[in-house]
Image (cartoon, rainbow, N blue to C red; front, side):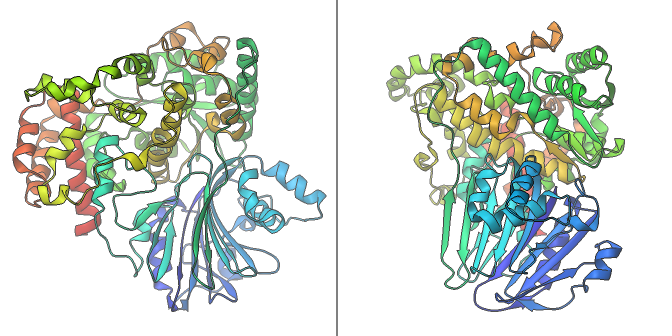
Length: 632
């Protein structure tokens, strides 16, 4: 797990000050080592940095003022092969291929054996070297073979190509900026903004979808001309003519296994999840399991125990989270797992409120609890954390999935919205409900962000005119059944929202989150099962519950679905310091003339539901985002 950055200047050589400042902007992602590689497009040379290890500084010269067309930067969080042999950027023996890589490849030993059988030899035990030699053998077909989480930047001087690739479901972020002069990329946007070619501008289309979906849907971001590379894709740039192409290398299986029985499905999911947990426990540093008290994370801990006798676990506790802590403790007691509980006070939240919000690179509708989890894992001495994230998307865990059949029945009455002429709160809710014409609308309705009418009312008219409010370009396959909702959950809820914030939260403290529910084999298998085994419209995660039945206490299995989240609305209503913080930032926001001040005041004065509080928080986080990335 690391941080990567780089650029390719098409027409001229530029100062290495660019890559130095870009790499420094993501220093938090890799405190253990750093490295650089620069090239004129014909030959390349490795360099050390001021934070490189002593042995790397002895091996390579320190990068100072230099000029090049291509530059790669790297920050290392040492997880596998802690020696200097795992240093990046990693260069092939013929010096023609150079790779920077952020993530973990869980099947790298299997691929390594395959390469050894083909005659390749290895100098390290790192997965990075496996990527380098896999590319030499298979080219871009390598992406299909990798099981894990990754963002890869690769320069092939022999074939004059620059390639950026991202894992199947976007577990590792990779952003890029492109104009007529350069291509710039990085693990975090804050690194891209340090490059001399980048002009910081607001992308109002990104802000609009952010307000609706509580995140900006890939490939857009809230920054003009900065994009998120879509999951399961790679981007290729020709170093000779600067041509630019993007290609998908994987999609969900189309063929369904209709003949499988429920017992077979339970047994196979159990087996595949065990394999995934076992492979993701592999590390050269301590590993811990993070438990929220629900089915997903406790099942991971139970399975981890059978492969790692001394596995530890921890739980983050907030106000109103007593039942989650109790259930996590039950599981720990049942399996004799050492279990720590961290009670996070309101005061701790307040102390880092602005800093933590501004670490995210877009507005947000909540407070991210995983930032506290990452900080606590670091305090306990753990670099690797097993997470239950991904189970809700893969196994129909969200409450909105239980409303799907009702919506499919009710949408035939959507015409009634054209006959609602009143504008009171109830009328607006009814009109919004009967405005869900397609699966994208239904998915959008399930998110906790603003509703379309609210979003359109908050923007100043001149800004709204520049926004593309038609969301047809965001539609996916749109099948009118659970399969259609599953695709939105996996591509938007998971890839654009949850794991993106997971990564920023974890890497702020130099910690790696791993996701056993999101292995290649498990995703392929579950998504190929018939709907009747994955979804019944009555209870969430019906299949996973049956897998967990032989591992988990009944109290956990019977616990209703609750998100692992901080009670933001209660915090806003009851904490005077927070209300003062909000008022201060709303006053600042109104002066910018982006949003209608009357609407802002109305929303602040009328907080009748939790959703009303969330709308206000979205505006506050927009203001803090603007302060951080546009004023500073």
